[in-house]
Image (cartoon, rainbow, N blue to C red; front, side, top):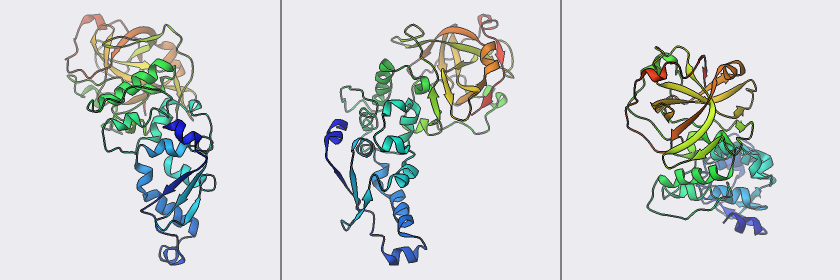
Length: 321
């Protein structure tokens, strides 16, 4: 479908829920005509639908029309407004290579979008990530996991793992992290694009290489710096942080890390509520590079507590996202 839009000479977008920006409307709302368009665009359903994202990005020329078929402007003339509403940089709205945007950034573009069918939140993004996979209606949320696995096969961008659950607390600290549930874990893959809403600024910092990461039936095998979190109780704690090969815009001296819980030596699941942490360069140097396996599916297994954990990782302080 993306190619279909790319090959179209022009795309017409009709807004059934946008009124003409009449002088009466502008006077009533004390705004200019441009501001009136911005206000109504912000509330238009078209910007909340999953399938219209690739329509917006792939079409070279778009004319936008209100409910009376009056032209409101073009994709080019309204580009600043479109960027403000969608969070998509102008360079990509103007035809820039989408592969230059990180996985996390592209996922964030769909964070506030919805689809009628659960599976379509994955299928509508295939063109954005230039991947193909069978459409299996009835698989539910597994479709989005399958999309991420397909993306993973073709990319070395580890911002794919730089996401947070909606349950993440803004006041997370080592103290309340220690009190988090220890009998439940989540997949290394996100449940929905909304999990990337706060990480659009994360981008890949280096290539993973061919041998540092691979997929198996139960999980992803990665080679990453791993350490214990300073302030998390005893040395026998099962909590770890794995540092991703990513950086964040405006945070050049830190890298994001994901909080893990050990199931057994070398095998982990993502912590269900911890979100991401920031690790500075000094902390990364003090961390030990380890080969680990992180579950691809949710786990309800209680982590083992064993002396084997006591000396496997060094302790490093972190900051919370």
